[in-house]
Length: 104
Image 1 (cartoon, rainbow, N blue to C red):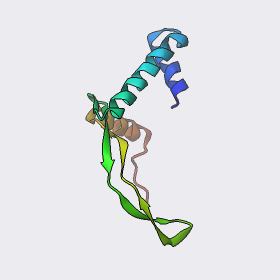
Image 2 (cartoon, helix red, strand yellow; image 1 turned 90 degrees about the horizontal axis):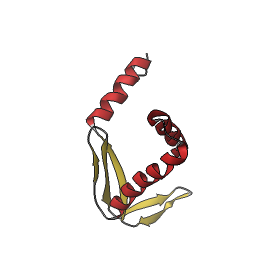
Image 3 (cartoon, rainbow, N blue to C red; image 1 turned 180 degrees about the vertical axis):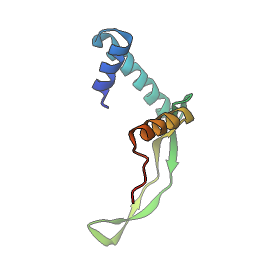
Image 4 (tube, rainbow, N blue to C red; image 1 turned 180 degrees about the horizontal axis):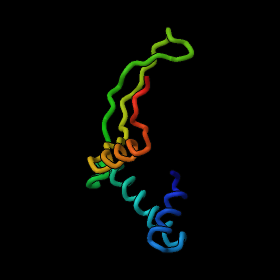
C-alpha cells in the first residue's frame, strides 16, 4: 500500500473527501517522525511500536572488492516491532488464504 492508497482507503471508510484526509495522514506521519527524531518511542496498542535503536560501528566488506575492509560508522536507525493484534491478524489472514501451507 502506498500513501495515496492509504488516503483513498481512509477517505472511503470515513466517508470524507480525499482533500480532507490528506492533512490528517500527513499530520500522523509527521508526529511519528518528529517523535522518533527526538528519541521517543511511539506505541500503538495492538498495532506495534516504532522506536529508534543505536547501531554500533562495525567493519564490513566492499562487495565489489571483498578484500577491502570498510569501516561502517555507528548510527541510529528506526525500527518497528509489530504488536500482538497485528501479528494475529496477519497470521489469521495468511491461514485463510492458504499461505501457511507447507511445501513438500
